[in-house]
Length: 189
Image 1 (tube, rainbow, N blue to C red):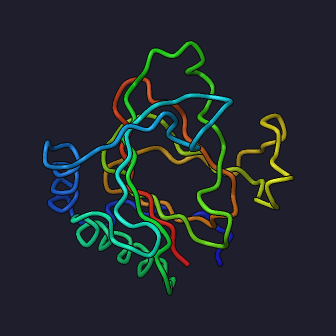
Image 2: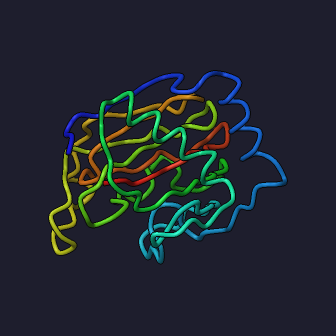
């Protein structure tokens, strides 16, 4: 498992980037409302958005999984990382919201509580940086307080950019203010 944060720009060519963006921003792509983009049943913060599950519970959930998973495999190949299994794959779509606390980041979280790699692909340019903390997951009884989180790295959304990091790191996103934020997020082992 890696401990570095790897960032690659233009992981796929511009035509493929535009195809993915046009697909996810089209009326052929199904988005499903979620009350909070970071954590199911979040009782601390409500940051609504939309989600689409490509792959979950060892099963393909979307006709588009094969199309987007090529981005993930190409990213892992570039990083010289071998994976054995896909755990989940999803996409998130956030709108700029006029929230009274929008200067606060979304709720820090981990995607899964098992060892994994997180692979994020940015579908479009925009704001709403991804923040990856130095703090790591050590069980749900040891969730760090927001004042104890220390930023390891921030990554700005740029169409065609991929970030790969160890899923043990707590991470989150800034709420977009000027543009929609759309990412594809896969977790692999």
